Image (cartoon, rainbow, N blue to C red; front, side, top):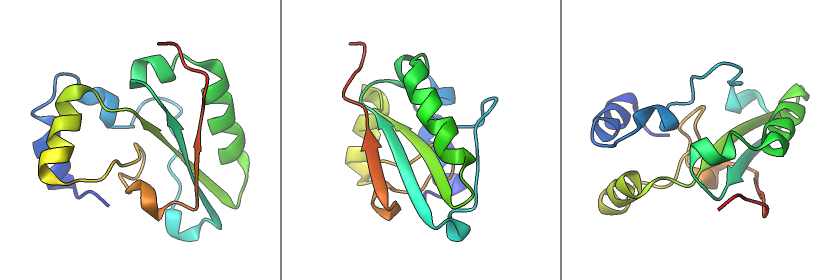
Length: 115
């Protein structure tokens, strides 16, 4: 899990840090240690594109309605964050808990995207 200090340092270096915070209205934050199934729902484009996709929002909502499942979101980082992650050898992480993707049981992704 990405610690708070590292996250703050990284986000101070990118153009649009809000797209990586995950604290927006209707974000669901569950305790991953208590979930039977940890699901990372990824979208192969930027946050703004993915969050405008109704199907993506619907799947996120339906999975998080389940008591046994914690679903977190992940999007393709923009080039500024992508470069920082590569240089610092930081794996891609989810928005809600900042957990690296390899810690999830299921990695789901959409093949339909805008760009």
